[in-house]
Amino acid sequence: MTEIVKKFLYLNRKAPYGTIYAWESLEVVLIGAAFDQEVRLLFVDDGVYQLTKGQDTSGIGMKNFSPTYRTLGDYEVKSIYVHRESLESRGLTQDDLVQIAWEDWESGEEKENIVEVVDAADVTELMEGSDVIFSF
Amino acid sequence: MSILHTVNKSPFERNALESCLRFAAKGASVLLFEDGVYAVVKGTSAEGQVKAALEDLDVYVLGPDLKARGFSEGRVIEGIKIVDYAGFVDLAAENDKVQAWL
Amino acid sequence: MKFAIQINEGPYQHQASDSAYFFTKAALEKGHEVFRVFFYHDGVNNATRLSTPPQDDRHIVNRWVALAERYDLEMVVCVAAAQRRGVVDEGEAQRNGKDATNIHPRFRISGLGQLVEAAIQADRLMVFGD
Image 1 (cartoon, rainbow over the protein chains, first blue to last red):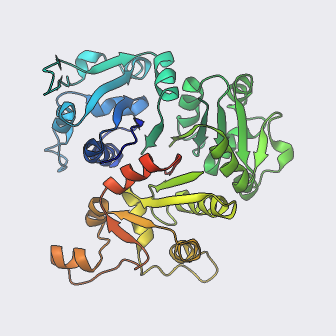
Image 2: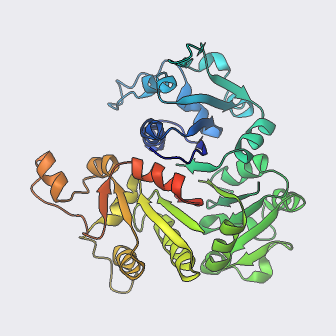
């Protein structure tokens, strides 16, 4: 579709359901897949809550969109980063988060879980190494 | 690669500034605008954090937003540069990319 | 420099649309190019034709329209966000069985791909939100 390939960083800092940002930012990622850019997702602060397991929205009448995160591997997303301190200060560990698998249909390379917990210095490096940063 | 970080919420309402300062690399620029300008006023509980940031980062505040909220230039922490919208545009152009902390 | 502008909030509720407007205007006055202004989340509400703010306050929608006319700006509203929030043009009204439209004709409803494309084509993406 386009010859330019940029390193996209989707910065997620907000919790799901209390506001629509988490869901509508995910929609950008899904649509963005068609543009063949190098996509990384970063979850910081309350954004880490978007990836928790066991979300059940039946009592609040909202669509549970958490299953969509598990399909991100099908949408050209190879890298998903979660800030460690953001998790820890919220009493969470990686065990509380969903696992997101990825497979390259051409090469057959697959990864069981592309969610990576990283430190602040890694977050800085990720930001510095991106070309475009989306915020919601 | 240098980033212009923008922060538009008050440090007393949100942790946007705190997170921005935690992750901003040395040599980056930070622009405070809208409610974010409250962070540049002398004598707040955020002053220490902002002054410490000035050692590694260039910090700017959008003058029109400061004025709108009733704060004169004299009440701004030393070392913080005041810019207008044209200056905001220049900052965005001079840095390699812009990161919004909402 | 080529800018892409993303606005996440509706008129008046947040300062986002105002800040974006003054930034965009300053950029254009300096001779920069604004590739596209993209309205997402509640930002789609900036495209209403029916806003009547008090006489002594700024008219946010008309202000965007005037800037767009002066500089031939492309102002795009995300279709999914618009559908949810009831921002409707003729095409959407027919497609979804609505009995009215409310969009200002200077705004164009289109897909999220327009935001992604703008981010790729522009040199800088500016995001104004909450």
